[in-house]
Structures are given as structure tokens and as C-alpha cells.
Image (tube, rainbow, N blue to C red; front, side, top):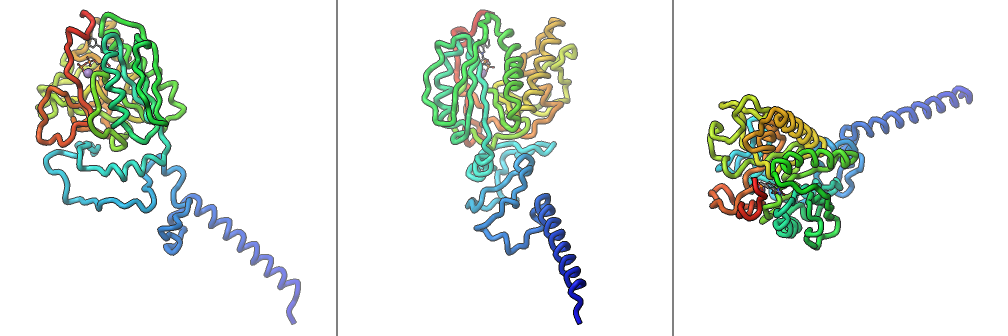
Length: 351
Ligand code: 5GW
Ligand code: MN
């Protein structure tokens, strides 16, 4: 005869065990979703939200569902240029990335791209073309906040911007000496980033105003710390780079040292990375100034020193800052951003 009491006990304990097992597998699937989902569950139509770890958005790239794009290859691609640094950072050239795939990855992240541009004194005349062409080529389809630092707020041009894109104007004092404007650039960038830091997943690019966009500058350029190789020196031996060569300067780079010569006219990255850069360059610039020393190319020299010690995680080819007067070399398949030819006597304040 079956004992009702013992049967109940067995059933209850089985139930408890079952519940315990379920709880356990649920919590397991939360921390490590991939291992707990049988292949049958992953059909293209029902990717589970558990597939994408909430944290993973921060540390690795999540591909959009069902995106069709050209098959990548590890044996065919550009052979005329180097696409990776010795410290394994990508060097971005036309033809090595897929813009559709990259936009598909970065758009859902809902990030904001901040751009800073200084238009002090006569340089305000460059702002209109800069803004108009940014509208056509710079992070199209993304949220973009452009901060203009100027002493002539009334002369900031009206440029129609797409939804999600905004212009912010910040007043800076006029100055006769460029060295003062230049010195304060890093300080103002540092202060701006400190205000923006609560959104530390966002990116910032600091750009020269005397330039125009001619081609896509987008999500392929995103990285922790991003530098652009200078169009004037990228084929040269490092002994010929115009680094600061006096050991008494904090921007000093010895002959035989240094990687590339980077532009002061374009750099960027994640907010906290560029904050560290701006803070360090400003500090070194001011400490040099106290000892009456000004680096050969001001903040560009300090930037080069910083980037030599703190290797950029992504390097942009000279496509990302060309110069209009310079004939294109064969490896330049597209010019994305380029400095205009300017009449120095006309635009610069007296030295
Ligand atoms: C720059 C050099 C000498 C005197 C004045 C300036 C200057 C630079 C200025 O009067 N106003 C100003 O807004 N700038 C900002 O600094 C612009 O954003 C400019 O693009 C940037 C760097 O100066 P550039 O563009 O003259 O430097 P290069 O090396 O690109 O010729
Ligand atoms: Mn410039």
C-alpha cells in the first residue's frame, strides 16, 4: 500500500528541487546567456535580448540583426598602405572598413558626437563652410553637438542643421596673440569635457575651423584615443618630424623616438581619454610657459608628445586632414576633411 504521507513528501521535495533548478538556470542565463541557450533557440528571427549582454555594449561591438554586407577577407584588401600600427591600433584608410556595418553597430548605441571648433578673430570667416560641409559629411544620421568658441558671437552664421544636430556658441575673450588663444584651447576643451563627463560614453573631436569636409567622416573614426597623421609628414623619416627638440621643453621628443607626426588640427576619442589629453597638454604648456619656453608648434608639439607616450587606439590616415594646396598622392583615394588655402597676412592678428 502506498503511504500517502511519503508520496506527498517525495512530490514536495521534487517540486522544491525543480524550482531551485529553474532559479539557478535563470540566474545563470543572465550572467552568461550564450552558454545556456540551445542552438535551436537562436533562429535568425528571434534573437533573445539575453543574447546581448547589457555590459557588452560598452566593451565590444554588437552587430545589428540580419544586416547584409560584403564578406570580409583576411587575404585581400589594400596593399599600398599600412593599416595597423606596431601597437595594433587600426590605421583608417578608404577601403578597409564597411561604413554600413559600422553605422549599424554604432547607431543603436545612441551616442552623441561632440565637436569643438575655435573661430576667434578673423577665423570666424571659415565657420560657415565648416558648418555647412559638416552637415553633409560629419557623422550624418548621428546626434552631433558642435561647440563653437568665438569672440564674435554675432557673426556666427545661420546654418540649417538636421534634427539631432545642434550648434552651441561659447564666448571666449579676444586676443592679439595667437599663443594665448592656442594656450587656452586645451583649457577650454578640458572644461567643456568636465561638464559633459556624466555622459562618458560619448565621443569628442577637436577640429580646426579653417577646413572643410569633402567626404564621409563617420563611425569608422570612433575610438578611445584618436589621432590623425599629418598630411605633410606621413611619408617622412621621424628624424625630420618637426617635434619639439629642446630637452628643456615638456614636449621634447628625442631623435630616434616618436611614431608618427600627428595633426594639432584634428584629434578626439572618448570623453575621458580626451580629457586626460587636454589636461596633460595644458599643464605641460603652462609649465613650459612659466620657464619662458614655447614648443615649436605649440599645442601640436604637446599633443605629439602625449600621443607618443599614450598610444592612440585608432590612427586616422591623412584622408582625415588633407591640405587643399597639396596635390593628392596615389594612396589618397578620398579626401574627407581638408585645410583651405588661407592668406595669413589677412586673417592672423599681428604677432
Ligand atoms: C592662428 C595662428 C596665428 C594667429 C592666429 C591664429 C588663430 C587660430 C586665430 O586667430 N583664431 C582662431 O580661431 N584660431 C583657431 O586655431 C582656428 O580654429 C584655427 O583653425 C586653429 C589653428 O590655427 P591655424 O589653422 O591657423 O593653424 P594651421 O597650422 O592649420 O595653419
Ligand atoms: Mn588650420
